[in-house]
Amino acid sequence: MWQVVKSVLAAFFGVQKDAQRREDFQAGKPMAFVIVGVLMALVLVAGVLILALSAAE
Image (tube, rainbow, N blue to C red):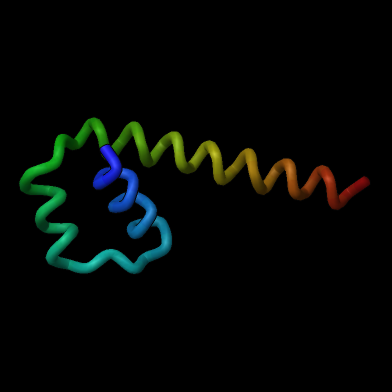
């Protein structure tokens, strides 16, 4: 599972190597990447929202 998290984080920042991306698509289960990606996106949005609300006070 940590490999999926690392791959999704690398994809979020745009620094994932092409070889790693190919390996992920060949060996990984797509649903794991989708779930981790959605969760990380929600965490990112929540973090930005919390930061914006705290800055507005």
